[in-house]
Image (cartoon, rainbow, N blue to C red):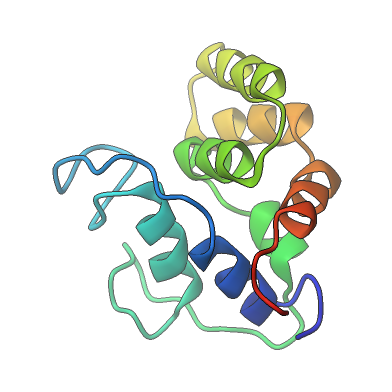
Length: 130
């Protein structure tokens, strides 16, 4: 699989440790009980578990997806599960708390933890042959 492809991203996320489950409909989880499942459902346009229908696009890759997610909990879980420095994850969470909208919160997370850091952590921790 091509690194940074959606297929690579899905398989890499599948290999990450899951977060602790929460009750369905917990804010930031939608129809999921973990952020890992949130990511996997969100990346699969056929899952039917998202808030709105999404169509997969051939020219979109993992970087694009990471840079367009508007749920800070998803971004923070991915960074932490991938092995990004806990200090950076905590700093990103604090930055996100200082703003109000989901778009601003997600942007704050990405400013603290840009895609290249997440991609490097994901690549370093790959446990599947991709």
